Length: 191
Image 1 (cartoon, helix red, strand yellow):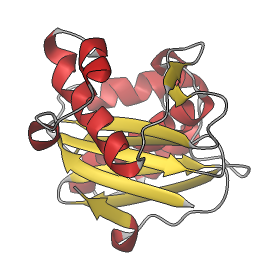
Image 2 (cartoon, helix red, strand yellow):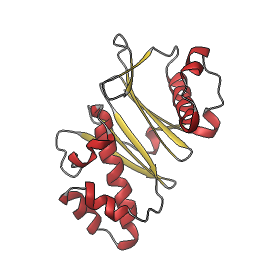
Image 3 (cartoon, helix red, strand yellow):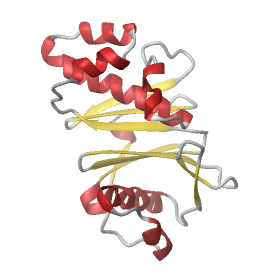
Image 4 (cartoon, one colour):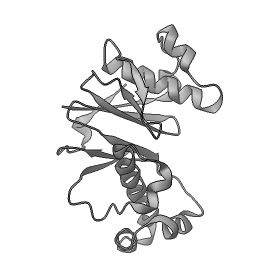
């Protein structure tokens, strides 16, 4: 079973959470996205299992809970991917102009990923950049890795991985799952 929940940080971060979670929330710029992610988790899992952290800081449920999750946010949008089939990764990015996107692609994209961009019309190349970026991030997050590992991931050559991508309302969303999962409008739950 996979569940993919989408929401807005601005509305979710104002929800009521247990006092212990409120105390754990970071201060500063990350606070609202952290609270919104925990609110999505609380809506998807009642009661909310204990959360611990992996070696690279990836949040996960304690060992006795047979569920896995991953959270991603961009702008005011947030996504939660929940699974009972094993580790998952998801990444969401707003398709937005980025002056140095080609410099970034040259630094971290594989030859196959570059070919994917080059096959697009010029006006579609930025969207292709974000599609590839979210795939790479979803793969890394599924592994529990660090963003610094992005250069080592070739998302154009992943025969052993289940990667799905969906584009909606100016967003790119990619997931990496242990078994096949087709990401579509029907798979999304809006919160």
